[in-house]
Length: 410
Image (cartoon, rainbow, N blue to C red):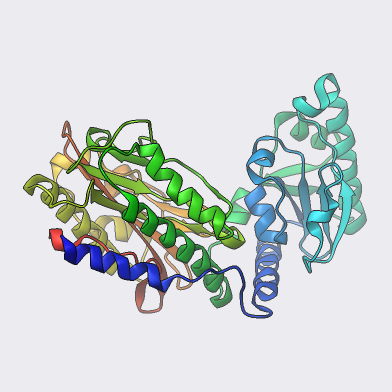
């Protein structure tokens, strides 16, 4: 298998430390993203949106503060007006996270009304929060009585209604805003992918029998953090019989020579962008069995058939209907979608198998997508997970992730 080792070793030379970007590029990305939000607000005829999701806040303002913690604890939020200011409500003594971010914003202290922070005063704090939001809406959009929010607990919804403010679900507004990537934005995304592929290469190099799944997974985290990345959304790495069915997170299981090991990175790298890549290997990089090759060949065919099929202007349902026909023996264990959008994390759209009757929409040039495949026999011992991150151009899908597949197995 020395040929495969050489092929993979070459990949590590292509990824440089992406701690910096060309001058002015990140500022252009910030401006583009904020204008995408405002344009979508105008299109939706909504005067303003309150953002709690830390990924949406990052998209609109490029500020970040303890994203995983604030994702569970709603302690910072941002109000963006379609034709007006950006107002940041920051967690206790954290206004400094806005330093060096060239987004013109008024900064205020957040009013925290989740039970952890407010305890029995949660309802009173929610009313205080709602009064402030309502006052800002009357100040900057005096003829309006509705606002979008991307995430809101029931106490806050009730408090805004008491202020005479109607609440619109802001998730669709933000998902659509994030759909189309600028050329500059893809440069930033590529920085995250390059870091991720360094982590994958490290995993490939150290993989040997006797390691635990968790030990191997730690190498991806190490490279991500070392090179300026941020966090990883899941722990999807499995080996041997744990590869079938899929969606089993890494464990203390010791990996054995010759069995399959598969993973899905879900990595949020430098500048907050996601690299979502899946590969499958054998432990020890030994020759696969005929059955392992059969599974891999089917996954490779599904992935590349579907990747070649997508074109701008094609509807999601048309793609699903025309996509690679999965044999019945694999269908029960199929992946949850054929493809999905990708940006700072998984994004709209999520495209279902035709049989699953998913929602419709249209592919557009400028989208970045992940094409998915999982192949495992119903009741089988092992399975193969593959995923490729791509940019949809006027001419079809262009791969963004370049880490090689095991083409020698085909």
